[in-house]
Image 1 (tube, rainbow, N blue to C red):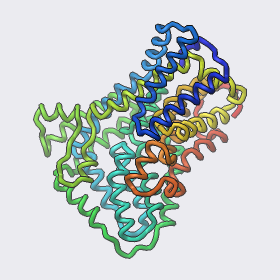
Image 2: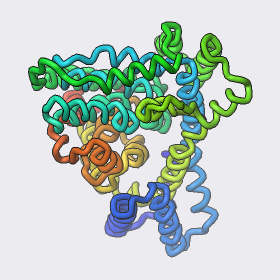
Image 3: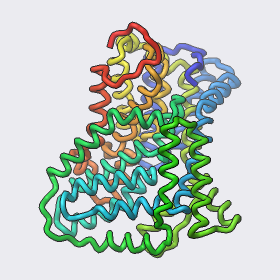
Image 4: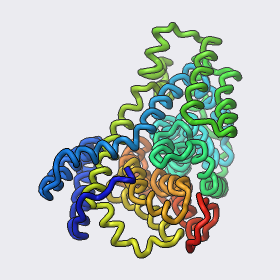
Length: 465
C-alpha cells in the first residue's frame, strides 16, 4: 500500500475537492441514512475510478492499485479470523464468563463511578468490544445509577471511558488489531507501547472518578446479583478457565507471533471446555465459525456471551479490504501525496509529524464519524513520513489508537456516539465532559510527541524533535 506510486499529480484544489466530496458521501451516508460504512466506501471507489478514467488512466492500472491496497490488509484479515475463533473458544472454556463474574464481585456502593469505570474496563478487555460492553454491563450500571439517584452523565462517562480502554488495550479488539496489522507491528508490542499513554490516562481517570463518586449508603444491586447468578448457572465459571489468560501473558512476554499465540490459546481453550461442557465435534465446528450462542434466558447475559466465531469478523474484514482498496486509489491518483506535499514543509520534525497524525485521526472521526477509517486512512497517509524521520511504526500505531479509536464516542454524529447515546439514554454532549479517559488519551499522545518522551526510533538519525 505505502509503496504505491502516484500515476498522476492532480492539483491541490482537485485533491481538496475530491477529499471533501468523499468525506461528504461517507458522512451523509452513515450519519443521515445510517448506512454501513462499506456502502459509501464502494461509492467513493467508483467515483475515484471515474476520476481516474477522466484523467486518461487505464482501468487495469486503477484495478492494480486497488489490489495492491487490499494486499496490505491480508495479514490483518487472517488475524481477525483467528481472533473470532479465540473469542468463541474463550466463551466455550468459560474464560470470558469467569472474568465477568470476577469483575462483578468488586461492585460496591462506595466509589461508584470509579468502580463503574474499572469494571467496564475489565469487561472491555475481556470481550474486546466497546459497544457490546456499553450495551450490556453499561446499561446495567445506568439502571443502577438511576435507582440510587446519582449523575447519569458522569456514570455514562465512566462507562464510555472503561469500555474504550478495553477496546484500545484488548488483544481481541478489532481496532487494536487493525492499528497493529496495517503498520506491521507485533500485536503485543503495540499493546505494550500503548501503555505509556494509556496507563497515565487510566490512573488519572480512576482518581477523578473516585473523587467525583457520591456517598451512597445503600443501593439496589439486584440487577448485578441477577447477572452473577445467571453466570453461575451457565456452568462456565471455573478457576481453570483463567489458564488461557496466563498463557496469553506468557506468550506476550516471550514475544511470540500473534497468530501463533491466538491459535495455541484457542486449542487450550477447546481442551478446557471438555472439563465442564464437552461439545460434539459438529457443535464445535459450528461454534468456531458462527460463534458461541448463550441461551440463559437473561437478555443481558446472553448479549455478553453470544460472541465470536470467524463469521463475526466478516464485517470488519470487508471494511478493511474496501478501505484499503480506496486508499490504494487515493495514493495512485496522487490525491493523498498532493495533500501531504502541501504540508510537507512542517512534517520535518518528530513533534510535528506526530501532532499532524493525531489531528488527522481526530479530524477523520469528526468529519466522517468512523473510527476504522480514522485508523486506516491516517496510517496510510503518515507511515512514510514517520519512516523518513526514523520513527518506529509502533509510534504511529499508538497515535492511531490514542487519537482515533477513543475519540469516536465523543463525536455526536459518529457511529459509536449515536449508538452509545441511544443505548444509555444519555446524549453524547452530556457524557463527553466526563469521558476522561477518551479526552486524556489524545492529549497525552500529543504531549509525548511534542516532548519526545516514550518515542521509539528504529534507527539513529539526526532529526529535530
